[in-house]
Image 1: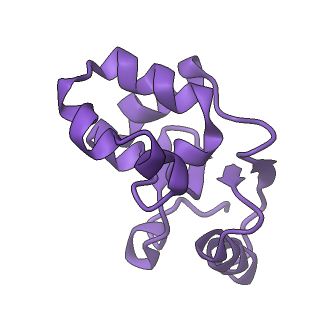
Image 2: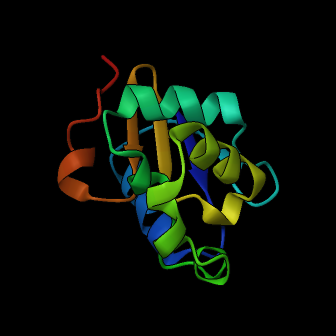
Length: 118
């Protein structure tokens, strides 16, 4: 399992504490220093079944500074993925990747469905 997080993010801290409390083992990746690649984001987007908009950190400064609220509707999915791959701070976090399961953001009810090791 891969946990893609930003160390200063309180939601990420809560998510990691939840994983620890529930006995999950994971590899940690700092989204600011090791931003997801275009190919990773494309794969995670497809596996997640979520709208691509959910991959954007809409409360972040980068999103606001770039005026993406008004621009996203005019962009193709390829352009959106390219933009996300350029700046880790644009990406919603945490992201959990476990095989075919991809979770974006921390919603405990969704995380309860993570597959458990036998």
